[in-house]
Length: 469
Image 1 (spheres, helix red, strand yellow):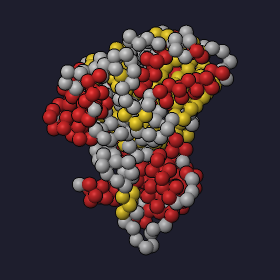
Image 2 (cartoon, rainbow, N blue to C red; image 1 turned 120 degrees about the horizontal axis):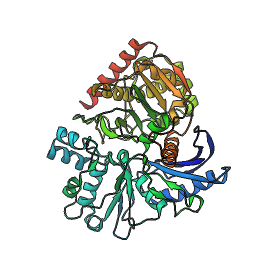
Image 3 (spheres, rainbow, N blue to C red; image 1 turned 90 degrees about the vertical axis):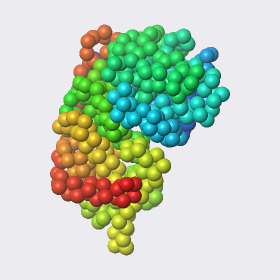
Image 4 (cartoon, rainbow, N blue to C red; image 1 turned 90 degrees about the horizontal axis):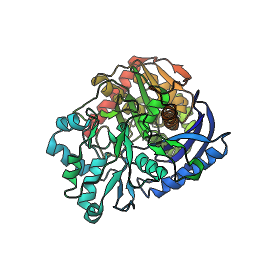
């Protein structure tokens, strides 16, 4: 049996056709998205169709089941006819930071964390709805339904305008869902949208059939899974178990784990999400990850491989250079208006090698802080699984174990979000109690000089305190 997983990310749509027996890749397709934080969802639908056509045309047999994983938090506002009211606001759009602060001031961080697993920041859907009400009252007044990116694509695939569905994982990133109870908290929507609270999707269990595909010819008749958020799909694709921490270095950076109990962190550093198996997914997210390396490489007139070579020629600590990599503001720590800072510059140390090293170390220090935040809410850290585009960098692989203070395993390169969606599709099609157990092959890197890593991280923390308090 062949199944298909779709990953609709910030930058592109990936579609993988997979053998449901062992998870082996059979065919794939890809289509790019414009690099914006505000976008017409029709772009995703067209990209989805193109990626699926590429994958299905190269598959040896028809696809029997499909599921969609999508970037979390994005707000898609629909009117009563199902038409999109405005371009979707994505997770990395920070305009709703003032609304996030006011929500926290009104309710208290601890109360909101207990209620929704989250302390509001500009990424979350609830804050975007509050921004809509304050800044576009006409659109807010016409709002009938609000969907997340994966919800919307699943809704389009099903061809059922009367019914929208989601799952616990993606729902738990909205700011108006309770991970502990598994139910919506619609009163929070009503608070930020007085008199215009939207209808919310039905929340399906992880392996529940969502229907069948009717609106994409290449998949017509295939069983449709509920889908999930991108981080939840990555955890599913990797087969993450308690004791594993996944660090993903893509457009955003994330550090997350799977736990048996929900998390409520009043500091807001750890988001208490649900996963895609019925458990929970405490997660720390940063806005700045692989693009920090892209920008630094561009500034130095090289590519990512060249940046890696430069960084590995520099000594650990970059001779005192420290980069605070907040090039696009930051989510954790909550500094939406911050900018990047390079500190410790002297005549002798301002070299391309040290700048490259500082970029890699700065990005990874932010993620190492995320791993510590997971420890502080009770997550056991026995190993780190390092994934994402930047995990292919030799410098990232060499430096990460030193700064993380724990052994790192790098799974073989794969589209783990799309693979997780495919695993869910196989789970739904098989009708079993547990998802399939597909093999995972990794390359291992030992922690190394942890004491030196601690020194680098302390220098980084001092720079953060100096610049941002």
